[in-house]
Length: 422
Image (tube, rainbow, N blue to C red; front, top):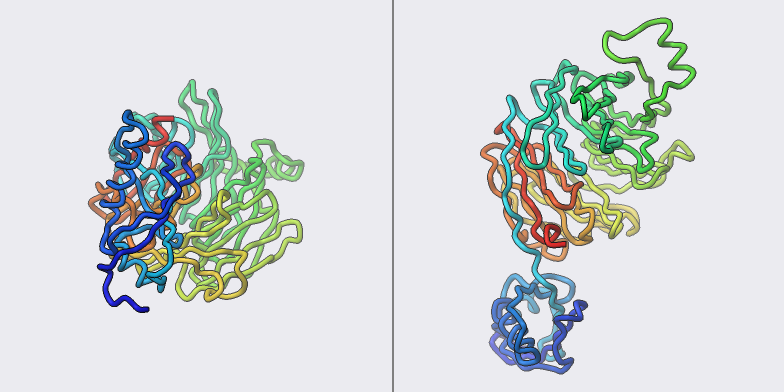
């Protein structure tokens, strides 16, 4: 029997993996027109009946693995689910709205941001690096590059010293040492070998190597160690660089046909790259070659692999984010799991949470940073507003802080209330 409207009665079963919020495991009869707001009232009423001390909790509701964003009947029709079956509805505590923190004002566009512990590293179009505290205090401005900086990341950081790397349109990557007590940064190595600007960089989990991707289409692997190799020591005796010592790549991998826009170490021998050539490639360094390839139908501006769920989130010029499963087979038709709609201009940057397996953020030329749940493709959880110009980079490396840099010369910081409570 086909029900033409969503107004009929439905049988549902309410389930949760959060045992403290479990309700009796029995069918409930509800109207097909109910929304998540009404389901929220129902669950809290049932919890209140079981425990008079229960305080109201905001829940999100999953039906067939997707968050309910329209009324239940519409949701079922969109997914082609029979109204006559008992509908399993899973509910989870809603992720709290992040709190806006500081606005860090720079002298030029902020094109690169990376947080570790209590420190934020930023790179600008005026060729400078800056170090800030997560409380908004500016510590240091570092000159050295001769063109806009495109990417930064930490190599190591402890109470006394930090090491980090920056890449630039000047075709170099620079490895830096920062003495925290003296608040002085020194360039240890200038990494030369790319023939065009370097758009992206990442450091292996063991901190021993780094990978760079460039507009010359090449992926290069370098030592990230502060120690000189024998070859570097010999070369240093022959010729000193004006700033720092020269470092050459350990490996050069060729395969992309256009600019490499993103690079990430999946493990110490495996690297993911995304490119303007519509492909993502996974490289096996033990073989010094290509392991697998995922073909899309748009240029990839950024890609990010989650170590928690094994999925890749990507962004492109068509305003959409896409979720790929690298284990899903060959070609986009086999691997695109979901498409996320909400940005109104091209999306420049994406980053998974390091502790919440379903959550990620994105930054776009529509001036918006959005917080997403991979189970909610129709709408983001929250808009993290504040930028007045395009967003150029975003980072969630520190689970406490969502950070973004933009062409309004600012870094915006949002604090996760969920982590703050832990």
